[in-house]
Amino acid sequence: MLPDIPENKKLILFDGVCNLCNSSVQFVIKHDKKNQFLFTSLQGNTGTKIINHFNIDREKTDSILLFTKEKKIYSRSKAALLIASNLKFPINLLAIFLVIPSFIRDTVYNYIAKNRYKWFGKKEACYLPTPELKTRFLD
Image (cartoon, rainbow, N blue to C red; front, side):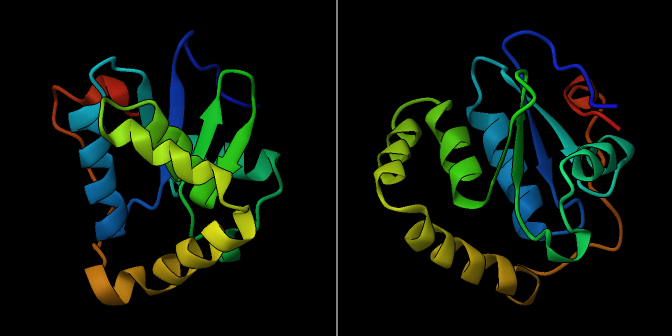
């Protein structure tokens, strides 16, 4: 069963052991002035349910995912750019890159995703939010 997302919220699924992914989550939290994003790790219960529902191959999931109230899922560069489009100015201007065909955007995205552990490192365990941020994270 898919989780219910509160009205006007979007859920970001991220690799909880990836340093780049965790830094990206921290970046979104800092720039999400409208408090519109919730977060869950790909490795958690909520992430697993969503991945299974959409038949996403866990072995090939090296992407950030964006899950919406409308029960839609976006991945790779589209997810990243849709997230950026909802952040404050000037970050939201990155949405202009949505005009570039996805096969070009995703080639760049895939290259970074493939090398993220080598370049940025990997944690032993998933990110644990501070008590103040705990309400923005789902299990």
